[in-house]
Image (cartoon, rainbow, N blue to C red; front, side, top):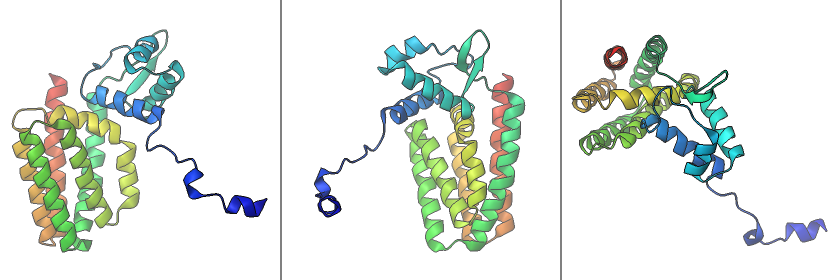
Length: 228
């Protein structure tokens, strides 16, 4: 019997799909919140979401619970799930954490990274600039996350990157707000090019300062937008 199983053709094996219905629904809902299709504080009615998404209530409930762990959804007593409101003090704390870990990662990348790392980072910034020019904000968010992932990886800061990933949904939401502000594309590209230049020069302290300045600048923009 075991011999028969061992000879089972590989073509008969059930392959797992690249993404489950739950994962696809999660991606759709996350993008809808980041793109402000659902406004902060808006109620998320399960029945309506089932109709809009074309999925079962059980899938919607699983997705809403997951988004709650990411900080994108809150569940209020006697009201149910709503889109989490952006809180100025929470945003400030997130930027403080980012400034610390990204500054350290940039410094480490400058000291550890090689020429290939620098070229990958530079190429990523070029793609970010093009995405800004075409107003493709979803691509800007995705490419920016990829830029930082490479920087943390080259700087051997895997645990720090895990911390960033745990905040990723809320970071993306803040990023979605700030990248749409006036002239942010030009500013962001210039700031990121300064980080790359410092890494290329193997100047760890300059890289740390450039990465920290980049975060502090966007923190100022976010604070002003939330205050307004």
